[in-house]
Amino acid sequence: MRKIRTYKDVTHDTGSGLLEQVVDQQHRLADRLALVRSVVAVASGKGGVGKSAITANLAAALAGRGLAVGAVDADLNGPSLARMLGVSGARLADRASGVEPAESPSGVRVMSMEFLQQEEDAPLRWREPEMGRFIWQSTLETGVLREFLGDVEWGELDVLLVDVPPGTDKIARLLELVPELDQMLMVTTPSETSRFVVSKSVRMAREAAVGTVALVANMVGHTCPECGHVSELFMGDGVKRLEEESGVPVWAQIPFDPRFGAATDSGTPLVITDPDAPSCHAILALADRVEEQIGIRGRDAVEEVGS
Amino acid sequence: MKFLCVECDKVMDFAERQIPGDGTLAAVFTCGSCDREIAMLTNPMETQLISSLGVKIGGREVPAQPMELARTSLEGGRDDAFVLSEDIPLASGESATPGEGASAGTATVGRVVWTPEATGRLERVPSFVRGMVKRIYTDWAREKGVSEITPESMDRARTELGLEGM
Image (cartoon, helix red, strand yellow):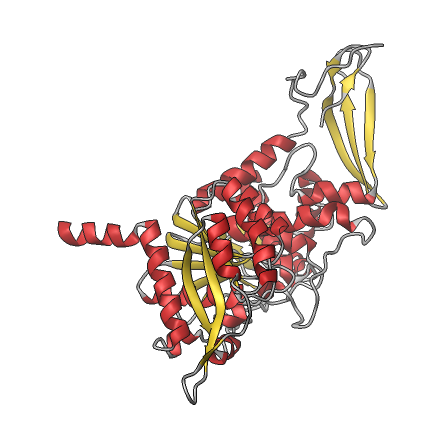
């Protein structure tokens, strides 16, 4: 039998230019993110735990402190972040160097698939052949997310938040694009089912050596607005178990507050309109941790001493 | 992806790329030793997979444009999603700022002039990708020292740049 050489044996370039183009894509993304101090993913693996509402409130809280904040809605199929930050329907300035993101009233620069779709109720569809979609769809959507990160003129940012849709595959997709992710906030609830699902994402993030992984427990109890009685929404100690089993710290415990969702539905995060709400105290405490972790507070202190 | 001429034990060189229709992508490779040619033909799914990577076999004639993959792949793109910024010449009836009007007719940027006929043809391009397409033609004209963009020069650019469907 003849011995055919392997791909790696053959060092001669064919001139098809594929590898060079992929490398060029990576360079464009890296160059864009070089102006971003910290990329922070808000993920879970589990759906319906409040990732987008937490992202919107966290972004607004950080921007309210004078930080330059960007937010990418990585959920191409069910975008909601633009709506929650009050920039639904924004138009994007088209420049040769990139697309200008929308800017929310709270000062957050936003990119979302919602800006690109004509009809509000239209499901995400690609022009390409329906047949064999499973072969190329993930590749295409990863490429579009790469463009959301790398083809948008974010400018200099202190923090770029990425709202990651459910599914550990979506976390893997982001890690492929941004292998040196600074922080990943894993949103969970006290339920056992949430613990079960989120534990897989936590493991993935830790194995990928994400800079910092922390848990954000959402819908932890509900305070009756009439009598002040605190009741549990979920039976179980899923958050505590997840913390103990994974060794990942809990950075915030956000109580359920119907106004939290109502505020993002109206396009103004609650942290803007009612920062004294218990849920917003938790968001602000989370913002403290995020800031501390990326060293912004430390930097500011040094600048103050030096001035 | 590499093609090896087994007889010569040499890697074949990319020679030509064509899109003959029905979703087929044809890439021709040649053996530099024996001049044998082969054509790789992909089915629509394979063509789409390559396209989904945002790459072109044989290299790019035009630099990658911002959000190119999203703009060229999305079904039902919003007509007014993008606002043409000041570095892109305006087509008649388009405006740099939402709500502002723009005079119809010839548009210029630097020494590049778009004739009304060329502008009219460009206006038939879906607005979702029009800014990107206009930039490609304008950059081509600047590079070639073409001072006036006409439908004929657009045809020439399409051929030279391999702009299928633009």
